[in-house]
Every structure is written in structure tokens, then in C-alpha cells.
Length: 173
Image (cartoon, rainbow, N blue to C red; front, side):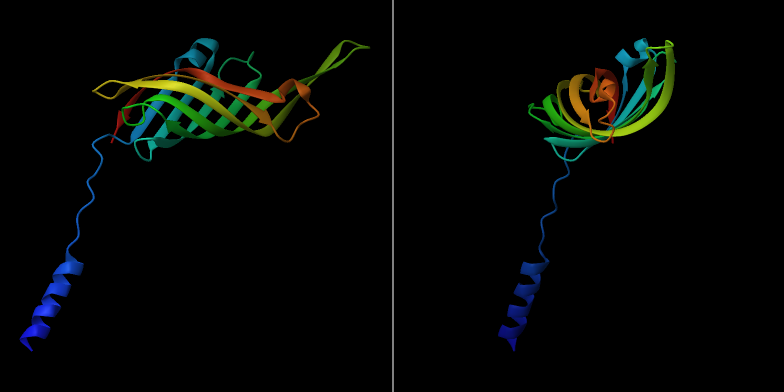
């Protein structure tokens, strides 16, 4: 009976013992604004969630403020893989999808008339960039990428879409 009780206690202690996973020491949320688009007359705000030290998932929302910009709204989810020594910083490569809404122009050569239509499309693409972060959590980022619209292929003006900017932001818990 003593042996059974001893075996039962050892089994409970063996299976009951667990080591807590150490939480990463870095912050996992970022919010950024694209300064290059602000100068051009548009607003782009991004949120990024860091999954681990090497990868992150994020979304960007672009809204045109100036009427001269053909792209009116762009929603861009992306996945990034980082190659730097710091957590989610340094050189990165990204894959993205972009839901974009833009104005399309058709010109009539006979009467010199133009017609504007609103179109919505979805693009897939890739990009590269670099991110630097201070000890206090401030972020500076440069990125660029290219994608291809998948659905409105008859409109060759907007078959290729671009993504890029100069971003400033903050990393927090």
C-alpha cells in the first residue's frame, strides 16, 4: 500500500510539474502613420501585431484627403518576416493583399469628353523595407512594394498598384 501511495504521489508530482513559458520582453503592438502620404494629401494609419521575434501581422488604412488623388480608399492586410537582431525590427519582407477603390477615367477622342467611374479591386503583392526602434518604443520605417489587381483587368491604367512610405510610430503593450 505504501508503494502504491508513493507511486501515485510521484506520478502526480511528475505530471503536475510544469514550467511556465517565459513571456517575451518586447512589446507586441504598434501604431504608425505614413508621413510621406500626409505630405501628398492622404492619410495612412497602420496597426501591427507582433506574433514573435521574427514575424508580425498588420493592417493599413489609406484615405485620400486631396481630390487630385485617384486612389480613394485602400485597406491592406500584410504579413512581415523580419531579419534583424532586435525583435520585429531591421530588414523585412512582406506579402500583402490590398482592397482598393479608385477613380477610372475614360476619354472619348471624338468629342474630347471624359467619363469618371469608381472601381473597386483586390491586389496581391510583395514588398521590402526596414524598421528601426528606439529603447523607448518609437519607430521609424521605410518600405515599398508592388502588387497586381486581380479583377478589373480591362482597365490597364490600374493593373499594377504600389505600396510604400516613410512611417513614424510607437510600440506598446
